[in-house]
Image (cartoon, rainbow, N blue to C red):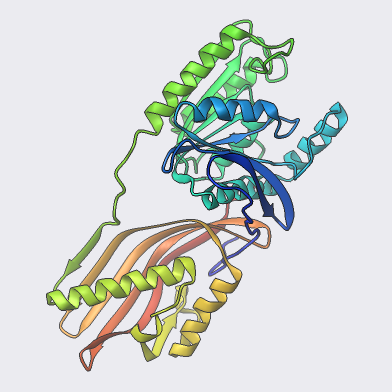
Length: 393
């Protein structure tokens, strides 16, 4: 089912820590969660660390410290809830089972952790997600939903793909580190995932370690295998260096044809205001670039809205009800022909509405005309637009 103009908000972030090393309180779906954030320096690349089925414990904090010592910021997510750190087997199985049954809740909590990390000033544009056991399973869920991360790493995680899911939306590289002697997640499942990733053209590397059982990285347990832990950790660190190589920020490509230099500057500023209003709901200055009788024609030309007040009202409604998880603008174009100009750009969004995560992509197109020396937006449509849930079917 496709949806048009459905934007959302499912969670809000409240911050209780600053950069350094401290717990971080945040909310997802109105429930409190408590993660952990550490950063060696502003601008450090980020590792999103997902815990095992016993919740966020000293184990994850220790691993976070190991990574921080190497120059990485780490946000250790909480998928169970503030104060929920199960000890008994049945409780661990119940909590993980609930999220296995409700994959959308799992995804919202993963996105909530990313939002909380971003609120701490973390580099979410330079992020690798990693997880252990249950956390490895969750990392692969994050990959399948199309999260815009650089890489996804699973240590002895669950490798099965739920029915009606696949890896077609994956954006980053996958690294799977597994124990050959794992009886909980067998080598048949390992091979099955390898075949699936290869068939779908997903960049991946999968390694198994001889004699290593399930949970072979857990310090002090009877399953701990120092050799496999050391080798897998070293490969993980090389993966981070390969994947998080510093990139210079890229400005969106913007092509401008025709018009005077003043026309180009004014129309380029107008495009910036449009994108800012659409992505963040900041409508300051939008009114002055809209014609009083501006017309919005919806995709498919099945409905239209006319007038500056109605147009601004739409942006305000969006700002009041929506928070976008990810957005990207590309192929920005401004074409000036006499007293008329066309502004357009492609967009990609990931957002949540009514507890469902959606992906939206398309092209936004505006027609401007010059009146009394000023450029005004007179007409808008989205000639290409598609929105689909990225939830499991």
